[in-house]
Amino acid sequence: MYVDTAIFMYALGSESPYREPCARILSAGATGSVVLTTSAETLQEILHRYHSIGRDEDIRLAFDAVAASVRRILPVTGDDLQEARRLGDRIKDRRVSARDLLHAAVARRHGLGQVLTTDKGFAGIPGIAPVDPLRWSPAG
Image 1: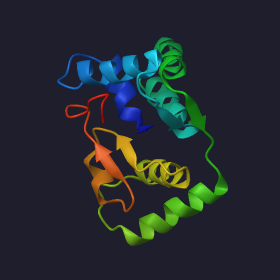
Image 2: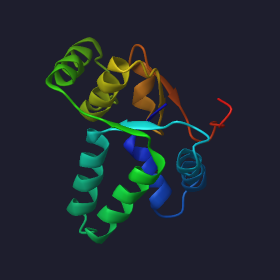
Image 3: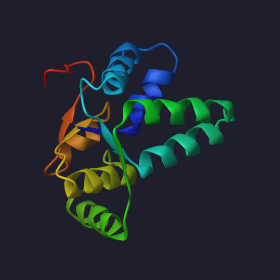
Image 4: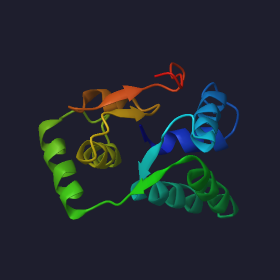
């Protein structure tokens, strides 16, 4: 299952209804009870976000959480960028961000149709079934 950046950000963030469910997902990945996958774009988003808000000390913590819970970190290729652009041409919903399109392109290329995310924009992307962490269970 592909893991969107939001899962890491909520798991490591301040108190919210998503914090515990997202932490539970990462714990399941770390123990191997579920196979989690993400892409280099996730690490770039974490780096960008924490650096932009002056929380550079949290970058290592977040990267360590990714390394501990994710089995594979997929590369982002030029083909993925072209596919994200094509998806963007077809999807006119502005709730779907360019980053979501890129995550979806990578996930689709690797046959990962389910994306763990809090982002409602994924629902409009063909071939992607968003999984809300509040409804996730390790049994699938």
